[in-house]
Image (cartoon, rainbow, N blue to C red):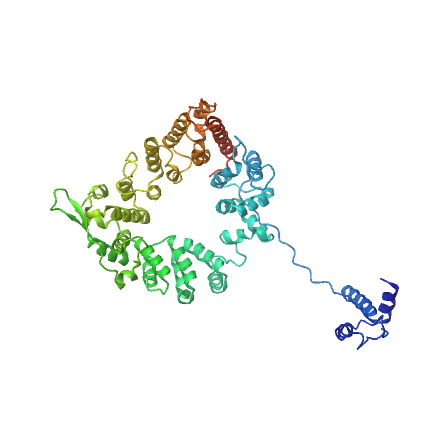
Length: 544
């Protein structure tokens, strides 16, 4: 502080308001006490203001101390075996942006193994090492697909950390009960208060959690405020009823058919059609049955179709969309929606007591087969009907055009999801043996991990055939990536013979042999690494 400032500060009382008024009016119109008029008045005013500022700041009273941070909650689960803890550190260090990360040559992609490691650790009931929690939360922040397994493994301490770091707040939204105001599900008053006053995301989380515990209570909560909710919120809340959908939901869903939002009406109709005993399913069955019959007067019994000639108000109320998309005929569009929403159990009685396989094998007159079978495919997926899915898939060795009902790979993949894991793997293995791997990627994605031995052998054999044929190698990179994550680790020994660089045919893609060798080396290394991971988690495994 200058001598002038010290002099002014000593001579002036701390009249802050007077200094502010002088600054606003100007020193030519007013000078505060102790400041002489003249050319030095502005600088003297600033010196006085500086001194007053220091004096005011120095005189601030200390604020009330913040509440001491509570310790993190205990995690009662058993700790990881030391080798598994070290493995977790290596997997987390390989995440994008971390030192040493990235995939190079034949080295395994460790970050792609993290989801499988988390699944195995969760299945064995281990607790996350405290020192690994920051890296684990960072990894889950960057990959939403990791979050459910990562937060389950991280346990209650992850939520404690998430409340201290804004970068990890996603954990509070994603974990059940993670929100700071989330009540105990056994606290009716807390539930009601959060439902009435909470943010939308908190209310969705609350409804989902309550639905899994007490479906009737969740539905009653939703009914209380249904009429005052926004249309987009009603749609999201209604979607939460998919979990645990039961006949008790029918009355509420029937009322939702009259909702002022078309999207809400369509979702309510879809949910009702998934309840085979619902009144809507019965109405749809009556409409669809009037459109589809068997003509027994022909040499071969044939399905005949008379599609609806109009979409009346009652059909629209039951979720039938009247306006067809561009390029679709209105009548076929309406027919498809009726058949899709009809319980599949309707058709054997309507079509002569035939089984699903026999029904699907019947010829369909006048070019309606594609539309009818496609609607049955959608119904089988919606109703998760294994018998109809099996019939519509047909044999995996069927020609490229597909089975009796499913034509596209996407349809086949959705139908496969209704079968049990063993049957699914056997069907895809048969498909690969007949058609190779070029069309199998979508189908492999719905198979259980690790792949069953017949499926694993089919994939390895098909890759070997593609390698020997000099096929363009990069077109199989997706299947290779799946094999690294899904092939049983015990298959590694069968792959040793494929590690050498093969002789390239004259018409092979340039460098194909080296690529295949490197890809198989990475596959073998990854499989052995996965085997080691599982062995590490098994050491000292807690008793069930």
